[in-house]
Length: 90
Image (cartoon, rainbow, N blue to C red; front, side, top):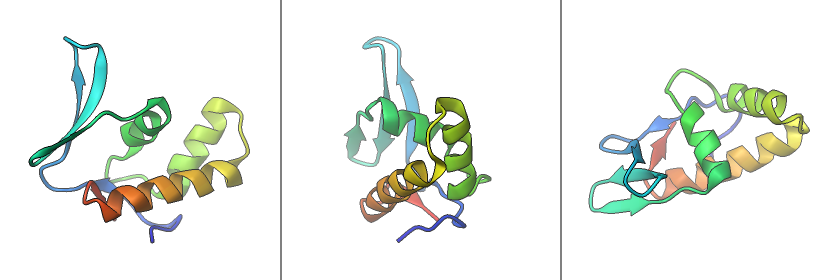
């Protein structure tokens, strides 16, 4: 389980790329590809190996004028799920 103090980064071999031909963003991983929804994309753009999960939640709460605790819970759950799939590590 990833917590607010964790500093997530994309796992080795995983890349977030814009697919300009199809007009969408994709997550490329060895032998896999994901198409993140708009919310996941906002989170993944902030996963840089420098920001903590808490800092990501702070940024999103300020950007979207939403309750930080709700965003932190959602971000933590999403990143934990992606970590279980080997997409991010912390």
